[in-house]
Image (cartoon, rainbow, N blue to C red):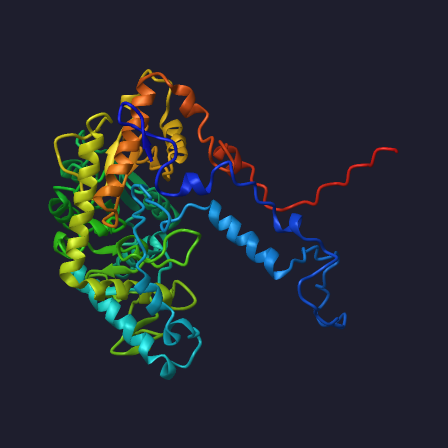
Length: 510
């Protein structure tokens, strides 16, 4: 990266995205546009299938799949990969998402035949190693959180939320308190919190944030009543702050006969340092991709184990591992089954590998490094960017608002688009909603000081240009990306889900 006379970065960044995704690369056509239906790279014999074999469900139109040679298919996907931004090519400053490095040791262990090649319906006697690993993972998850049980079954964080809240509902139904139909949710919560509560039939009662971005225990007490089933509180919260009154909030919730569900998406900021069970939580999901470095994004595979307090342990869903055995049908008032099989084995292997390679002290150090990196970014950018909650250190992420852009004609979205031209993935935008034009940045513990300095230099350079009146640089951005500026709102509302073969244009007369 070159520097101009003001010491600001110019040109593309060092993360590789702008270089890989620059206008020097042509747009990659679809497979349908590369190949044709008349040829194939593989010779297959014709197969005659009787009309009754498919019970009347046989295809009525040609399959219309393009045939390609192996080099054509391989090159297509390699070219696409060069257009992608990934954690292996650069930093992800996405706040609330914890896009950390995925150690290659994790990948090596996950590919061991005894873990990678097993089937969910394999006889239990043939998967004892996998069950032992799951039992070990469950043990350390409970140890790190000081809880009494864990459900490994959930497939993601939101699925884990659903599991935890279903356990709460089952416990209250068993106690004859099915009339509790209200869930308290702070304004700064992840959007999945109120969505989960509503999906289960609860009414959501919002708790406002204080001026310092945290939840007031008195506001929680005022909202409690005999109709409240639980509170869903994120700690550390989505403003990047540790809730200072979390113990008092838990005590008030329990005194009212309700349960404390903690959104554990940000557990990576406190793992090995604080045990949520000591704070009074009853249920908490743990995103393995966030805290324990398993791959994130792309629609999966994910895993969102849920730890449960002693009060909720009897309601854990089946199946679960107990004393080396897979329990498919448990006695008592357990929750039942929330998914067909146990969960994502590959994620269990990766997460336990991460734990065992770090040890307790290493996990604590990773959490501390994540906090240090976030505070370093806030200290550097806070000289120019506006900090909505000054005067207190942050945990895993740094939050800024858009007031420093006032009068520049540049919005948070414009700023994020310009980051693409500088070689960085944009930060999280407009979340949490309690801050106007929010810019939420989470560097994670994976990034070095050199990377953070490059990122901060770039961000400060962009801020300098915005304040200098160069709004056109932002409103036109990105100009170096393969697809230039996209209308994400229109794309989300009017997606093109099926490729249609273009109509053949009539040929001009000779």
